[in-house]
Image 1 (cartoon, helix red, strand yellow):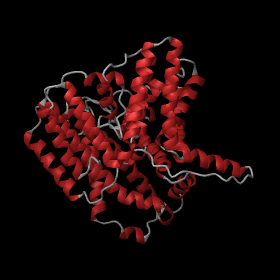
Image 2 (cartoon, rainbow, N blue to C red):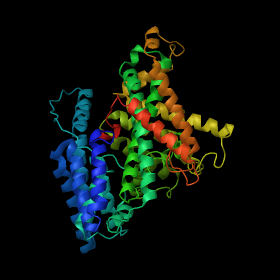
Image 3 (cartoon, rainbow, N blue to C red):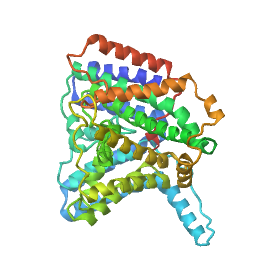
Length: 483
């Protein structure tokens, strides 16, 4: 079920009413209701993979209990078994054909003509996200950071909670699990803020991302037919498409959870205002970046072993991040490129230089800060070309032509495609960035304080709703559903 669908617009109020007015007498009843509706939410896509979701849930719950009850040796066995099965399932569904094809390509390079068979495997939606949810639980128990829960219902709703089930944020058991064991009381102000965040997320998804996709998809699919300047525009449009798409999903997920009394972790913190690439990665897909830091980077030694270890561990987590996104060399190249971007900062201990909010307490950035923001944004635009391209060859060809001799040319056929709708989209992108700049010290674009003008607030709400109605014709699936 898509957040930007009519079905979800009907589904959410029904669940809200049942949760607060029917199941409100018991925490267990509320949790059972959330499990049922979460499985319905997931089955709307493909009911056949409900068993996989349940199996992953039961595996990690059972493993957690066994690790806590056994000796150190058996604890390690149960831990290894859980990790191997989880990664094995993820690897089979997501990477089987990639490994087979890559192996075949390698044999071909050395003169061997292999006869390999790939499988028509459907990638279960959200498998990367709920697998990492469960692994955080198992790893934290193994490291004695948390104790296993005795209540299977509480653990099952932690894994399957519908707002974050298919595209995150990737929550930690230590922060979200306890919220399912506590009594929830309806908080009007929290719910209102949740609705605002949902509205802002829908604006970024429907008005920004989906409409940017119309032009970005065409330009990337037919890049050989366009001039360099248009290719640059296509890369910039995709940069805003993926931001509006994924951060919009996160806003809707976080806002929806707040309607039910839960606080999910922040997943985006206005990343395109970052002053260096290290700051960008502290603000982009925060839940994945922090997950890789805590469960991969730090266990590998983190930054404690000298420059070589910092460089090695940084490269590893960025390659894993790229590979996590999909079974394609383009994602690995994207991760490797970001590693190259950040390595100079790591080597010279500058990666923690910008940890505050840019131009905090000021209306405008300094000239230096503006240059840093533009430079960092430019680096991300180049990296997103690899992320979006069908192959590494296409990515290099795209970049080569973008900076080639046709950069200052505009073909007549390109001008015909520039209509009023395109001008509107550019205006909406500017409007979004202005709003987020003004709100950059807050948690989302529509977070108003109690002193905000009622007229201004409602004018913004009505304007966004009108835009959602007018510009909702280009309905696109969320990009991160494929991961």
